[in-house]
Image (tube, rainbow, N blue to C red; front, side):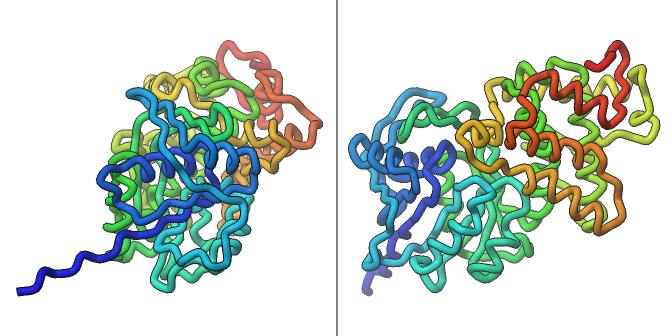
Length: 367
Protein backbone atom coordinates (compact mmCIF):
# COMPACT_ATOMS: atom_id res chain seq x y z
CA UNK A 1 0.00 0.00 0.00
CA UNK A 2 1.48 3.29 -1.08
CA UNK A 3 2.08 5.88 1.62
CA UNK A 4 -0.26 8.82 1.44
CA UNK A 5 1.51 11.89 0.11
CA UNK A 6 1.88 14.73 2.58
CA UNK A 7 0.49 18.07 1.38
CA UNK A 8 3.18 20.58 0.43
CA UNK A 9 4.26 22.99 3.14
CA UNK A 10 2.69 26.44 2.75
CA UNK A 11 4.54 29.48 1.53
CA UNK A 12 4.05 32.66 3.60
CA UNK A 13 4.48 36.31 2.67
CA UNK A 14 4.55 38.80 5.56
CA UNK A 15 3.79 42.30 4.29
CA UNK A 16 5.07 44.77 6.85
CA UNK A 17 7.93 43.50 9.02
CA UNK A 18 7.61 46.00 11.82
CA UNK A 19 7.13 44.90 15.41
CA UNK A 20 4.21 42.49 14.86
CA UNK A 21 5.06 41.24 11.37
CA UNK A 22 8.75 40.91 12.17
CA UNK A 23 8.05 38.90 15.32
CA UNK A 24 5.77 36.53 13.40
CA UNK A 25 8.28 36.13 10.56
CA UNK A 26 11.03 35.42 13.08
CA UNK A 27 9.05 32.66 14.80
CA UNK A 28 8.08 31.02 11.51
CA UNK A 29 11.64 31.18 10.19
CA UNK A 30 13.01 29.70 13.41
CA UNK A 31 10.60 26.76 13.72
CA UNK A 32 12.16 23.30 13.74
CA UNK A 33 10.83 21.26 12.11
CA UNK A 34 9.75 24.07 9.82
CA UNK A 35 5.97 24.32 9.29
CA UNK A 36 6.49 26.35 6.10
CA UNK A 37 8.29 25.96 2.81
CA UNK A 38 9.30 29.62 2.74
CA UNK A 39 8.84 32.89 4.63
CA UNK A 40 9.40 36.16 2.81
CA UNK A 41 9.22 39.52 4.55
CA UNK A 42 8.21 42.57 2.53
CA UNK A 43 8.87 46.16 3.57
CA UNK A 44 9.15 49.51 1.81
CA UNK A 45 11.78 50.45 4.39
CA UNK A 46 15.21 49.76 2.88
CA UNK A 47 16.89 49.77 6.29
CA UNK A 48 14.63 46.96 7.52
CA UNK A 49 15.21 44.87 4.39
CA UNK A 50 18.98 45.40 4.61
CA UNK A 51 19.10 44.50 8.32
CA UNK A 52 17.13 41.27 7.86
CA UNK A 53 19.11 40.26 4.78
CA UNK A 54 22.44 40.82 6.53
CA UNK A 55 21.65 39.75 10.10
CA UNK A 56 18.41 37.79 9.89
CA UNK A 57 15.48 38.31 12.24
CA UNK A 58 16.54 39.23 15.77
CA UNK A 59 14.06 38.88 18.60
CA UNK A 60 14.27 39.64 22.29
CA UNK A 61 11.49 37.47 23.69
CA UNK A 62 9.97 36.94 27.08
CA UNK A 63 12.31 33.98 27.55
CA UNK A 64 15.53 35.13 25.90
CA UNK A 65 17.06 36.17 22.59
CA UNK A 66 17.04 34.52 19.20
CA UNK A 67 18.52 35.30 15.81
CA UNK A 68 17.55 33.38 12.67
CA UNK A 69 18.33 33.78 8.97
CA UNK A 70 15.58 35.50 7.04
CA UNK A 71 14.52 36.65 3.59
CA UNK A 72 13.21 40.16 3.03
CA UNK A 73 12.63 42.37 0.02
CA UNK A 74 11.20 45.71 -1.04
CA UNK A 75 10.22 44.41 -4.46
CA UNK A 76 8.78 40.94 -5.02
CA UNK A 77 10.34 39.28 -8.07
CA UNK A 78 7.99 38.56 -10.94
CA UNK A 79 9.03 34.89 -10.98
CA UNK A 80 8.42 34.45 -7.21
CA UNK A 81 6.09 31.44 -6.76
CA UNK A 82 2.63 32.18 -5.34
CA UNK A 83 2.05 32.30 -1.60
CA UNK A 84 -0.56 30.28 0.27
CA UNK A 85 -0.86 32.89 3.02
CA UNK A 86 -0.24 36.63 2.83
CA UNK A 87 -0.01 38.13 6.32
CA UNK A 88 -0.91 41.83 6.25
CA UNK A 89 1.00 43.41 9.14
CA UNK A 90 1.17 47.05 8.07
CA UNK A 91 -0.52 49.89 9.90
CA UNK A 92 -4.23 50.25 8.99
CA UNK A 93 -3.78 53.28 6.68
CA UNK A 94 -1.48 51.16 4.47
CA UNK A 95 -3.49 47.90 4.50
CA UNK A 96 -5.40 48.42 1.25
CA UNK A 97 -2.28 49.37 -0.69
CA UNK A 98 -0.49 46.37 0.84
CA UNK A 99 -3.28 44.02 -0.20
CA UNK A 100 -3.28 45.34 -3.78
CA UNK A 101 0.50 45.05 -4.12
CA UNK A 102 0.54 41.46 -2.80
CA UNK A 103 -2.52 40.22 -4.69
CA UNK A 104 -0.63 39.08 -7.83
CA UNK A 105 1.40 36.66 -5.68
CA UNK A 106 -1.54 35.19 -3.73
CA UNK A 107 -2.29 31.60 -4.71
CA UNK A 108 -5.69 31.00 -6.28
CA UNK A 109 -6.82 29.13 -3.15
CA UNK A 110 -4.70 31.27 -0.82
CA UNK A 111 -5.78 33.63 1.96
CA UNK A 112 -4.88 37.11 3.09
CA UNK A 113 -4.70 37.41 6.87
CA UNK A 114 -5.69 40.79 8.30
CA UNK A 115 -3.87 41.61 11.54
CA UNK A 116 -4.69 45.32 11.71
CA UNK A 117 -6.75 46.75 14.53
CA UNK A 118 -10.09 48.13 13.45
CA UNK A 119 -12.44 46.54 10.93
CA UNK A 120 -10.12 46.13 7.95
CA UNK A 121 -11.37 42.73 6.74
CA UNK A 122 -14.17 44.37 4.73
CA UNK A 123 -11.69 46.67 2.99
CA UNK A 124 -9.36 43.80 2.06
CA UNK A 125 -12.30 41.61 0.93
CA UNK A 126 -13.17 44.23 -1.69
CA UNK A 127 -9.67 43.75 -3.12
CA UNK A 128 -9.01 40.00 -2.79
CA UNK A 129 -12.57 38.67 -2.55
CA UNK A 130 -14.38 37.67 0.67
CA UNK A 131 -13.49 33.97 0.32
CA UNK A 132 -9.78 34.79 0.35
CA UNK A 133 -9.72 36.87 3.54
CA UNK A 134 -9.41 35.89 7.21
CA UNK A 135 -8.67 37.96 10.28
CA UNK A 136 -6.54 37.42 13.35
CA UNK A 137 -6.94 39.58 16.44
CA UNK A 138 -3.50 39.95 18.02
CA UNK A 139 -3.52 39.52 21.78
CA UNK A 140 0.15 40.24 22.49
CA UNK A 141 2.52 43.16 22.14
CA UNK A 142 5.88 43.84 20.54
CA UNK A 143 8.07 46.80 19.70
CA UNK A 144 10.90 47.54 17.28
CA UNK A 145 14.27 48.15 18.91
CA UNK A 146 15.95 48.93 15.57
CA UNK A 147 15.42 47.74 11.99
CA UNK A 148 15.15 43.95 12.00
CA UNK A 149 15.41 43.73 15.81
CA UNK A 150 12.16 43.20 17.74
CA UNK A 151 11.16 42.89 21.38
CA UNK A 152 8.18 40.91 22.59
CA UNK A 153 6.60 43.06 25.31
CA UNK A 154 3.73 40.82 26.42
CA UNK A 155 2.52 37.25 26.10
CA UNK A 156 -0.64 36.23 24.31
CA UNK A 157 -1.91 34.67 21.12
CA UNK A 158 -4.46 35.15 18.34
CA UNK A 159 -8.21 34.95 17.81
CA UNK A 160 -8.59 33.65 14.28
CA UNK A 161 -11.57 33.34 11.96
CA UNK A 162 -13.59 34.72 9.10
CA UNK A 163 -15.87 37.72 9.49
CA UNK A 164 -18.76 35.71 8.03
CA UNK A 165 -18.25 33.02 10.71
CA UNK A 166 -17.86 30.20 8.18
CA UNK A 167 -15.64 27.20 8.85
CA UNK A 168 -12.65 26.96 6.54
CA UNK A 169 -10.01 24.18 6.46
CA UNK A 170 -7.37 26.75 5.54
CA UNK A 171 -7.85 28.32 8.97
CA UNK A 172 -6.67 25.15 10.69
CA UNK A 173 -3.49 25.16 8.62
CA UNK A 174 -2.96 28.80 9.45
CA UNK A 175 -3.63 28.17 13.13
CA UNK A 176 -0.86 25.56 13.15
CA UNK A 177 1.55 28.17 11.81
CA UNK A 178 0.52 30.94 14.20
CA UNK A 179 0.78 28.62 17.19
CA UNK A 180 4.53 29.01 16.77
CA UNK A 181 3.97 32.57 18.00
CA UNK A 182 1.24 32.03 20.60
CA UNK A 183 -1.96 30.08 21.32
CA UNK A 184 -4.67 30.35 18.67
CA UNK A 185 -8.40 30.50 19.36
CA UNK A 186 -10.39 29.53 16.26
CA UNK A 187 -13.74 31.32 16.41
CA UNK A 188 -16.95 31.58 14.43
CA UNK A 189 -17.46 35.05 15.96
CA UNK A 190 -14.49 37.03 14.68
CA UNK A 191 -16.73 40.09 14.41
CA UNK A 192 -17.35 39.95 18.16
CA UNK A 193 -13.63 39.68 18.86
CA UNK A 194 -12.84 42.50 16.42
CA UNK A 195 -15.37 44.90 17.96
CA UNK A 196 -14.24 44.08 21.50
CA UNK A 197 -10.61 44.78 20.55
CA UNK A 198 -11.79 47.92 18.73
CA UNK A 199 -13.45 49.17 21.92
CA UNK A 200 -10.23 48.62 23.84
CA UNK A 201 -8.02 50.21 21.18
CA UNK A 202 -10.29 53.23 20.79
CA UNK A 203 -9.45 53.91 24.41
CA UNK A 204 -5.93 52.57 24.91
CA UNK A 205 -4.27 53.45 21.61
CA UNK A 206 -5.99 56.81 21.16
CA UNK A 207 -5.49 58.01 24.72
CA UNK A 208 -1.93 56.67 24.56
CA UNK A 209 -1.38 58.93 21.55
CA UNK A 210 -2.95 61.95 23.20
CA UNK A 211 -1.29 61.30 26.57
CA UNK A 212 2.10 60.49 25.04
CA UNK A 213 3.16 57.86 27.56
CA UNK A 214 3.06 54.15 28.29
CA UNK A 215 -0.22 52.54 29.27
CA UNK A 216 1.01 51.72 32.76
CA UNK A 217 1.73 55.36 33.57
CA UNK A 218 -1.36 56.76 31.90
CA UNK A 219 -3.84 54.44 33.59
CA UNK A 220 -2.81 55.84 36.96
CA UNK A 221 -4.70 59.03 36.08
CA UNK A 222 -8.36 59.07 37.02
CA UNK A 223 -9.24 61.25 34.02
CA UNK A 224 -7.61 58.79 31.60
CA UNK A 225 -9.64 55.91 33.02
CA UNK A 226 -12.84 57.94 32.90
CA UNK A 227 -12.24 58.95 29.28
CA UNK A 228 -11.43 55.32 28.44
CA UNK A 229 -14.74 54.17 29.90
CA UNK A 230 -16.64 56.76 27.85
CA UNK A 231 -14.84 55.74 24.65
CA UNK A 232 -15.52 52.05 25.24
CA UNK A 233 -19.16 52.76 26.10
CA UNK A 234 -19.71 54.58 22.81
CA UNK A 235 -18.01 51.80 20.84
CA UNK A 236 -20.09 49.08 22.49
CA UNK A 237 -23.31 51.00 21.76
CA UNK A 238 -22.44 51.13 18.05
CA UNK A 239 -21.42 47.46 18.02
CA UNK A 240 -24.81 46.52 19.46
CA UNK A 241 -26.54 48.55 16.75
CA UNK A 242 -24.49 46.59 14.20
CA UNK A 243 -25.88 43.37 15.64
CA UNK A 244 -22.52 42.22 17.00
CA UNK A 245 -22.25 39.87 19.98
CA UNK A 246 -19.13 40.98 21.80
CA UNK A 247 -16.53 38.52 23.03
CA UNK A 248 -14.56 38.83 26.24
CA UNK A 249 -11.02 40.04 25.63
CA UNK A 250 -8.46 37.39 26.65
CA UNK A 251 -11.41 35.45 28.06
CA UNK A 252 -11.77 37.83 31.01
CA UNK A 253 -12.35 41.48 30.03
CA UNK A 254 -16.11 41.85 29.64
CA UNK A 255 -16.94 44.95 27.58
CA UNK A 256 -20.67 44.54 28.20
CA UNK A 257 -20.00 44.92 31.94
CA UNK A 258 -17.50 47.77 31.54
CA UNK A 259 -19.88 50.12 29.75
CA UNK A 260 -21.14 53.07 31.74
CA UNK A 261 -24.77 53.22 32.78
CA UNK A 262 -26.62 56.51 32.34
CA UNK A 263 -26.17 57.19 36.04
CA UNK A 264 -22.45 56.43 35.87
CA UNK A 265 -22.01 58.75 32.91
CA UNK A 266 -23.42 61.63 34.97
CA UNK A 267 -21.69 60.63 38.20
CA UNK A 268 -19.03 62.91 39.68
CA UNK A 269 -18.55 60.89 42.85
CA UNK A 270 -17.77 57.27 42.09
CA UNK A 271 -20.33 54.59 42.89
CA UNK A 272 -19.19 51.09 43.96
CA UNK A 273 -19.81 49.78 40.42
CA UNK A 274 -17.84 52.66 38.90
CA UNK A 275 -14.96 52.08 41.30
CA UNK A 276 -14.94 48.42 40.28
CA UNK A 277 -14.65 49.40 36.62
CA UNK A 278 -11.75 51.72 37.41
CA UNK A 279 -10.06 48.83 39.21
CA UNK A 280 -10.31 46.70 36.07
CA UNK A 281 -8.66 49.43 34.00
CA UNK A 282 -5.90 49.75 36.59
CA UNK A 283 -5.30 46.02 36.20
CA UNK A 284 -5.17 46.39 32.41
CA UNK A 285 -2.62 49.17 32.82
CA UNK A 286 -0.52 47.00 35.12
CA UNK A 287 -0.60 44.01 32.78
CA UNK A 288 0.34 46.02 29.68
CA UNK A 289 2.33 48.67 31.50
CA UNK A 290 5.09 48.82 28.85
CA UNK A 291 2.68 49.22 25.95
CA UNK A 292 3.14 52.40 23.94
CA UNK A 293 0.64 53.49 21.30
CA UNK A 294 1.62 52.46 17.77
CA UNK A 295 -0.30 55.52 16.53
CA UNK A 296 2.00 57.74 18.55
CA UNK A 297 5.02 55.99 17.02
CA UNK A 298 3.53 56.47 13.56
CA UNK A 299 3.09 60.20 14.15
CA UNK A 300 6.67 60.47 15.42
CA UNK A 301 7.84 58.86 12.16
CA UNK A 302 5.81 61.32 10.11
CA UNK A 303 3.17 58.75 9.14
CA UNK A 304 -0.59 58.95 9.09
CA UNK A 305 -2.16 57.80 12.38
CA UNK A 306 -4.74 55.01 12.28
CA UNK A 307 -7.34 56.90 14.31
CA UNK A 308 -9.82 56.99 11.40
CA UNK A 309 -9.76 53.18 11.42
CA UNK A 310 -10.47 53.12 15.17
CA UNK A 311 -12.50 56.00 16.61
CA UNK A 312 -13.36 57.08 13.08
CA UNK A 313 -15.18 53.78 12.47
CA UNK A 314 -17.20 54.34 15.64
CA UNK A 315 -18.09 57.89 14.67
CA UNK A 316 -19.12 57.08 11.08
CA UNK A 317 -21.10 53.96 11.99
CA UNK A 318 -22.64 55.73 14.97
CA UNK A 319 -23.83 58.47 12.63
CA UNK A 320 -25.37 55.81 10.38
CA UNK A 321 -27.31 54.34 13.32
CA UNK A 322 -28.17 57.68 14.91
CA UNK A 323 -26.00 56.99 17.99
CA UNK A 324 -24.14 60.00 19.48
CA UNK A 325 -20.38 59.48 19.84
CA UNK A 326 -19.11 62.86 21.09
CA UNK A 327 -16.06 61.60 23.02
CA UNK A 328 -14.93 59.43 20.11
CA UNK A 329 -15.28 62.35 17.68
CA UNK A 330 -13.36 64.72 19.95
CA UNK A 331 -10.59 62.16 20.54
CA UNK A 332 -10.31 61.50 16.80
CA UNK A 333 -9.98 65.23 16.15
CA UNK A 334 -7.38 65.63 18.90
CA UNK A 335 -5.17 62.90 17.37
CA UNK A 336 -5.36 64.63 14.00
CA UNK A 337 -4.37 67.92 15.63
CA UNK A 338 -1.31 66.21 17.12
CA UNK A 339 -0.46 64.64 13.75
CA UNK A 340 -0.68 68.05 12.05
CA UNK A 341 1.54 69.66 14.69
CA UNK A 342 -1.29 71.84 16.01
CA UNK A 343 -1.10 70.18 19.43
CA UNK A 344 1.39 68.03 21.32
CA UNK A 345 0.98 64.79 23.21
CA UNK A 346 0.87 64.95 26.99
CA UNK A 347 -1.48 65.22 29.93
CA UNK A 348 -2.20 68.82 28.98
CA UNK A 349 -3.89 67.53 25.81
CA UNK A 350 -5.79 64.93 27.84
CA UNK A 351 -7.07 67.75 30.05
CA UNK A 352 -8.15 69.72 27.00
CA UNK A 353 -10.05 66.70 25.69
CA UNK A 354 -11.78 66.17 29.04
CA UNK A 355 -12.81 69.81 29.21
CA UNK A 356 -13.99 69.80 25.60
CA UNK A 357 -16.42 66.91 26.19
CA UNK A 358 -17.58 68.31 29.54
CA UNK A 359 -16.14 65.47 31.58
CA UNK A 360 -16.49 65.91 35.32
CA UNK A 361 -14.38 63.83 37.67
CA UNK A 362 -14.34 64.17 41.44
CA UNK A 363 -11.23 66.01 42.52
CA UNK A 364 -10.48 66.92 38.91
CA UNK A 365 -10.42 70.54 37.79
CA UNK A 366 -9.20 70.25 34.25
CA UNK A 367 -7.37 67.05 35.18
